[in-house]
Length: 276
Image (cartoon, rainbow, N blue to C red; front, top):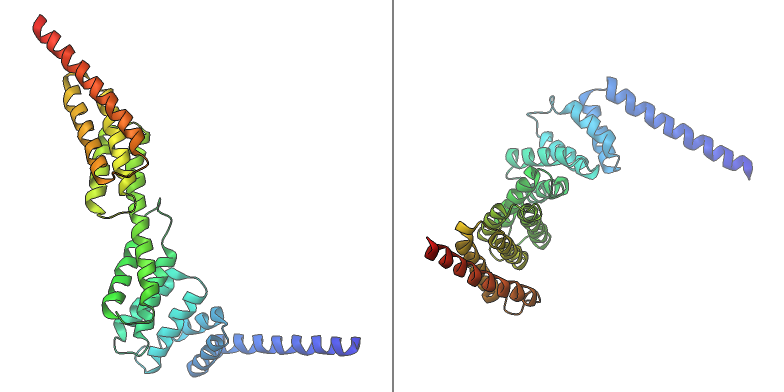
């Protein structure tokens, strides 16, 4: 039994070495036709890295030949399967441009968007690929509204929108936490204008009011009345928009303090005016 195991191991080793030797020979010294044939074989065997190396070798020689349509799709997919999404999106985009009538163009359009989606970074980093993914998904959704992939495309698209919303929300909230209340108020105002219907709208109005509250309560006397009035208006807006919010009790107590401070401030200003 041990002899059979050893023999089997030797045979497998020989096959692997022969296969590797054949691959290297074709890669380095083979005709382009042989490279194309082996590249397709590697692709179909899901040996995508080997397929990519071969495809890259023959991209130039096959540039104007009928096989190029197939080559461009397979190298795009090979990069996608090896999780090199930046290269995948690049090649899929080229494929869509070069072969708009291809039977594979719908799949390529989806995978191009998916590649940008998968390479998009976390919200705190530059969002260039996120915007590219949104554009690619929008193009796919517009072009193929009845595609079996449309549900997945819409899900990914909405997820990307939420990420951009959260990025803008976090920027505004950072102003609040660093006590830059004027900037926070403006940032939250911009957020609500730019992201109508956002799931973060309640929190945006919440922090916008708290920023206005802090700005009013800590204001210099000459600007205090206006800022306290603005903070009270900010509370009214929150109350009207989210009358059932569980945050309303906290904010109502803060609004009561604003009213008290406003009364005291007006009395103080009246006294100063009388003495002058």
